[in-house]
Image 1 (cartoon, rainbow, N blue to C red):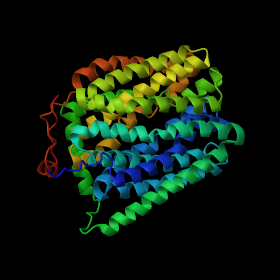
Image 2 (cartoon, rainbow, N blue to C red):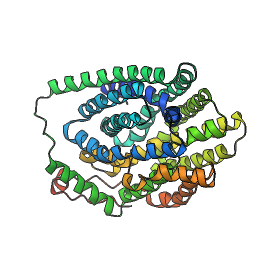
Image 3 (cartoon, helix red, strand yellow):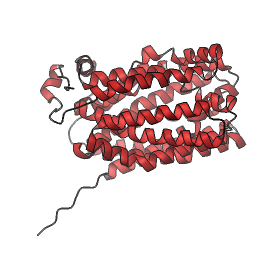
Length: 421
């Protein structure tokens, strides 16, 4: 009797793109936890740091939906290649910037890169996986990807502590250049292999996609509640996302090398548990992992704010890593199932920074709370908001197995029925 070979969970193309993501994001993990300190090193005070990150949130407002739509229109790898060229330019500017104002220009380049690459890659992973094992595939991909945190965090802290920020960004630019070369080469190969012409992006096509997304967002189904909960998290966590390094370094006395070590510890914890997170999503539903993961993330923030020794900070970062392992695969799997395939890039782009206009002043508000009421106060805002949203997530983040994404006729008509909750 002939045996049928089981298809591998990760295709060859997905593995190559995953390698490029790892190369690119080692640099991101190197500078991510340290960027507020770099802005401070170039002469900015706490209030100016808040202004910097508030202004830097403007660029994603222009790119977040555009990147996903371009991905839906011309192809996932092609969109990743376009974004990568912009990101490489951003790294170069980071390396040579004479003052903190120049970093805003670098943030524009990196914002475009994230808006084009992130949604395209998530949509590509969804398209390269079967629905019944999608959570597992997302878990495996994200688990392998997290090697960037294990390498990037400690490497960035070591380079910044011993050789300065500019050398650190130079190394990041080199790694990002490798990723860019891979993506541009793959995009060119795919274009040469195409036998049918690719439909050029048009404003009419963008209008149809936006109408479809808006129909999903306003219909009261699962997508509506994802949007609302993601918006609450986006607004509140934007207040403190860039204050964590300042708090840990300036208030808690954690060195940049220790910051990198904590980042690596969280990544290792996520790598260990992320396969469990994906399996949990596939077996019991996405909402289980999302709720449990957010409980652990909330506990990690609370412990961090009350820690007095580095060992306790380690414990907090372990909980943070486990929480991210449970939330990540479940969240991506839920979005990919709740929206039609033709809209996945646009949807991932939209949810990567939903309600961006409303959250725009959040970093500045966070710094005002810091200076007015004390360094710990801003961090309790997202913590309380997260706990209040968990009952809503448990009730509303439920996608019945009978639900199917609408067919192409509905998309062309610009009306998409909402997934029932």
